[in-house]
Image 1 (cartoon, helix red, strand yellow):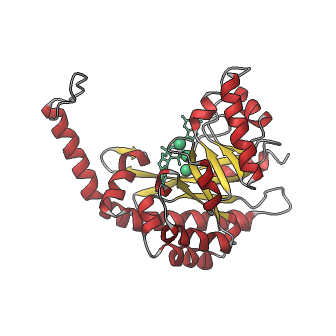
Image 2: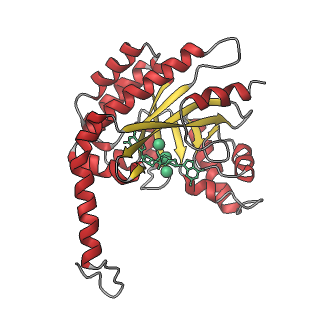
Image 3: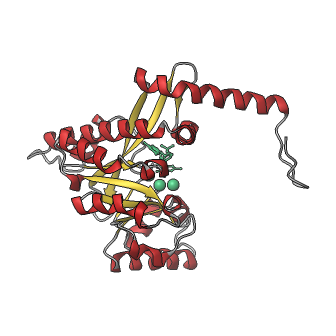
Length: 285
Ligand code: C2E
Ligand code: CA
Ligand code: CA
Ligand code: CA
């Protein structure tokens, strides 16, 4: 184990070994898991802060592991990124989520169920993969979902130092009508001036901003920061989504500050797709 100087936080060798074995086990199991259909998607609603209506949902992948039970993405997305399996896995998530959104669109109608939009996460490796545009076009065409109903979420860190070559596929998708969201905005090396250059139409403010809104009134500095980001985003014609809304106090303050849509446990935890239909109908009555 490496020494971290005075401030040591080493694991014992046994623990380190156990972790390595688990990691190794999960990594080697990934391709077969994809083939066996062990991944599934939960959907978390995005609501309009103005009137509370459901606007769409974010697709969040899970692995139903035969021994370890349900694993969240933090347990396997980094491994999938590392091994390149993220490309076929990401393609599967996109295909499945778009198919689901298409089925919501088919169910939409006079009973008040509006056609929902679908947000899908893209990891940096997928961004660099030459098949991204063709795969996305293919998935959309085969499903019949209008491109305008799809939003691809990319993280700021995935776009750090992005040159035109990397931005070109995103630009092409944006030109087709696909929305691009900048995920976890404000966590990394936010370069506000950079925003102008990126083909994004949505900013997803990271949960840390939401956490700052728990007291009422919130710290004036925290409010000013959010106010400034929202005003800048709106002047660039970007919509602002807030993540991690857990309480009504947070929702109310973020609404006052002009944020457009919200996502979080206050509204609903991620869950099965049929629940979206019920939630959406419930707010129509
Ligand atoms: P993210 O894109 O920032 O997704 C939001 C995460 O916050 C989700 O965690 C969600 O369950 C959680 N969350 C939602 N509402 C609340 C709340 O009110 N409070 C708190 N504390 N947390 C909330 P999850 O599902 O564990 O996903 C973690 C990350 O894994 C995601 O972060 C995303 O970066 C990644 N991920 C998920 N699905 C995919 C995928 O299909 N592809 C790729 N590349 N990454 C994915
Ligand atoms: Ca996301
Ligand atoms: Ca996020
Ligand atoms: Ca986040």
